[in-house]
Image (tube, rainbow, N blue to C red; front, side, top):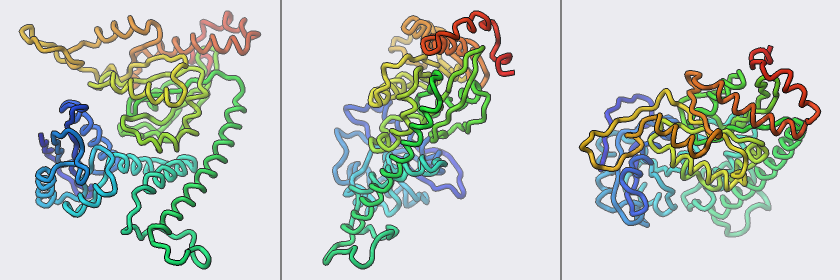
Length: 411
């Protein structure tokens, strides 16, 4: 259950990944999670050399994996110039300390890796403050007496009590920074609330979905803008809002940060002000990567997150993207094993979902532009209903201009 990957690397950090097969997480799912972890590592700038999996009822409280597996990992690390080991679940301070003592390399868990990517991607003051807050909230319960490198923004006469230990000083500094960042984010949130109010009563449409499903590419296609899009996880971290006109109908289109399984709770909390765009939206475009083998599980992850945000009851159009990348392998007639997603043709998936959702789903390729006109029509129909409720005196405009194309309206 160890997978070695043939790669060559120069400047990138070489890493190995570690996960568990448990009663709650079978081998297929564990491998899928490690594949996603490898994608996260690649996004952060690391190169995955090997993946380790171990069967266990639950993580070892001292070292996550058992003693024998840790020795096996340690031997591989020492012999292959590995500088970092990443674990697929959150590690306690004790686990990190014990594993570092054994392996003598940098140890990260899934949350710390995601936080590193967020810190790298953050561009605006809002996103940077949100990431910094999440980092400090992650670090606070993990302080140890070895922690001595925090920048001292406060200190000196009157700030350190008699006999105060280093860890107590560091904890106080972090708590002060958390308080300052929360105040800063509240001020930013007030500004954003004013901005949202100033947009008037225009219909708001928000793109939501799992990370790397093509939301930004779709945003660029619909709004004719140049939002940054890349085949990396969390390519978009800052919320982007564009005014879009389909036929004669104007509305606001918002691109938001992508979701992911095992997303740290404090990270969701930190980004709630950004995700207010989702809560304030009138219509959600739930973008799904139909070519992903586990797209249905990704849908569930997004739906759970939307429920946590209080936005699960909004009118939603399911946009199944990347039909150009969809592949499947037909089963042999004598193969009696149950079918998986890899054995089901796209036409069957389309029929199944269209039967389930009716007009609330569409299959597109944002990269190729396939079925984008159909998606625009669906958005137009739903946005028009909301717009007519808010601006009933504009009803005559729809009868007059319904035949216009979006290009005509833009000109």
